Structures are given as structure tokens and as C-alpha cells.
Image (tube, rainbow, N blue to C red; front, side, top):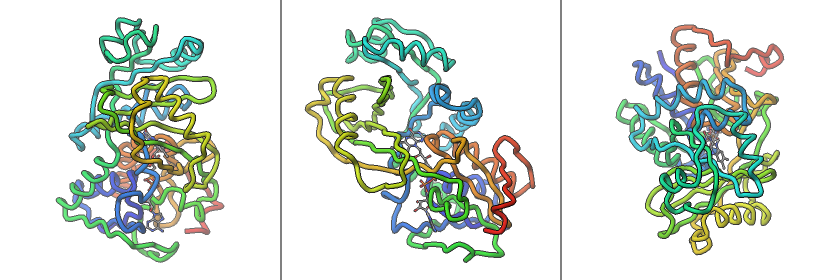
Length: 336
Ligand SMILES: Cc1cc2nc3c(=O)[nH]c(=O)nc-3n(C[C@H](O)[C@H](O)[C@H](O)COP(=O)(O)OP(=O)(O)OC[C@H]3O[C@@H](n4cnc5c(N)ncnc54)[C@H](O)[C@@H]3O)c2cc1C
């Protein structure tokens, strides 16, 4: 069997790998000239946080996310398993209590516990929640590692190939084109996310730290070698090229309030990506003719992609059904 995967974001690459590992002849077509900056995946934080995400999402996200965590550990050696620390400044302690009520799989920490985990935060927060079983990765390193692994399995990722709808009619296709699939999946919408990369030799946080706030909850994810990703805004918009001054102020203020040494950090990059989401913010495998779409990964693409990729491979190869993520919309059949 031969399968063409369109899109070299995290959904497309994990899917290609799941198929190639099962002996399928796969090719990946990507319209961008290179991996760098190609799609939304390039700008992600890389948090693998199934239980934290439960705060604002359905139980399905935690289930698929927990499954994917194991996949990342076996497929990407750069996966870091140091948990997630969730903190709130003194005026926002109600947010921390609410976060705890909506989530599970954490332990309460007092000031000494926080200091033991992240000595630089000693004395800055009285309470925290620690999600010990969560992880994180550098999305850019992970995307590169996936393409290398694919090339080891003789799978070519062909860059600079913009596939027009209908162009591959008659072939078995898995469409992982994110928001670009909106012409065929009209229910998709864009949720813009702005982020920063900072460099500081003085900050040595070792795990993602989420700072709760009633209006602008934000997080800092360590990338190693003094790099930190600060993210991310959630704006109902599919405009993906501009970053507002307000967003920059909020991201920088949150980083500075977490750790004053971020005030001296260098701004390495200001970026923005647009997450593709369905109205219920849940991911879908959607079959339209011979094309299977993997889409709607919203704010959970790295967290969910391996679990969706596994299901997609089993759907295409074995005809299995996964009602928890499968979606059929007769109105969209004609768009095959
Ligand atoms: C700021 C920010 C922070 C985030 N943080 C996290 C996080 O911490 N953890 C997490 O799990 N998720 C996070 N996300 C969400 C995650 O990034 C997305 O869910 C994920 O990247 C979606 O992946 P994808 O492969 O579906 O889409 P994309 O990464 O957008 O990939 C789609 C690809 O298809 C290509 N393409 C489109 N049309 C065509 C065509 N016609 N022909 C060929 N190629 C085409 C595009 O160029 C693109 O490369 C974050 C998102 C943002 C914006």
C-alpha cells in the first residue's frame, strides 16, 4: 500500500512515522520550502500536559494525551519528564484553587516544596500544584528528529510541494494541513497564538511553569542552553503574521513577574502560529472519499498527534473505527 501524507507539521510527521513503522510506503508533501516556520507546529511550546489541560478541555484530551506521552518517550529521546509546576501570585490564589478543582494527578506544594524543585523560585510563591507525570519537549528539535527518523525508513519529505485540492484523486491520502484544510472542512477556525523566545544565562528553570491569572494565564518552557519559550496568547483570529504590542507586554510582564532575571534576558524571537480548531475544540479524524483528515488539534497538537496518528494508521490499514475521534459529515462528502 502507498499513502501520501500532506503537511509536515506534527500531525503529518507522526502519522507518516506510524505508517512507515508498519511497513507502508509513505511520502510526505509539504508546501513550505523547509521545516523552519512551516506551520503552527514550529511555534508551539512543546508542553505535554494531559492533566493540566483538563482545566479547560474534555476528558478525551487527557486520555489521548496520556497515551501520546509514552509515544514521545520512545520516539524522541529529547522528551523531558520533569513534570509541570503551576503557580499563582498572592492576589490570584483563587485561580490556583480553581485549577486544582478542575484537574487531577497533582500534588499540592508549599513554599519549601517549590524551592526544592526550582530553587530560583524560593520565596516567590506560597503555594503551587505539581503535575509530576507530565513532560515537555523542544518542538523544533522534535520535528527535525521525526524527519530524520522518517528518512532512516526511506520516507521522503518533499518540501516546496503545494498540493491543490483534488490533485491526488485516486490515491490514499492523509491530509494534515492544519488551517489550510478549511476550504474542505469549513467548520475549522483559527486561534492565534503569540510567543517569545528569550535567552538568559541567569535563569535555570528546569520544567514548564504555568503562571495563573484571571485574564492572561501564561507559561514559560525551558529549551536548554539558556533558551525559554514564553507563551502563549489565545486570540480568535486566523491572522498569523503580526504580534500586538499588548501581547508582547503581557508575555514579557508574566515572565518578569515569574523571575525578575527575565528583565535582562535577550529577545531571540517573536513568533505567531494559528491553531486550527473545530467548534468543540476537539480533534477529528474525518474521512472524505479516499482522504482521511487529521485536524482540529487546537492547542494540543504535540500532546495529541501520536495518539491520533496511531488511530489514523489503524483506520487506513485495518479499517478500524475510533468513534471517540471519528467524524462523518455528509455535507462535506461533495468536497472530497
Ligand atoms: C504559540 C503556540 C503554542 C502552542 N503550544 C503547544 C503546546 O505547548 N503543546 C501542544 O501540544 N500544542 C501546542 N500548540 C498547538 C500545536 O502547535 C498545534 O496543535 C499543532 O502544531 C498543529 O499541528 P498540525 O500538524 O495539525 O498543523 P501545522 O503544524 O500547521 O502543519 C500543517 C502543515 O501543512 C502544510 N500545508 C498546508 N497546506 C498545504 C498544501 N496545500 N500542500 C502541502 N502542504 C500544506 C503547512 O505548510 C504546514 O506545515 C501551540 C500552538 C501555538 C500557536
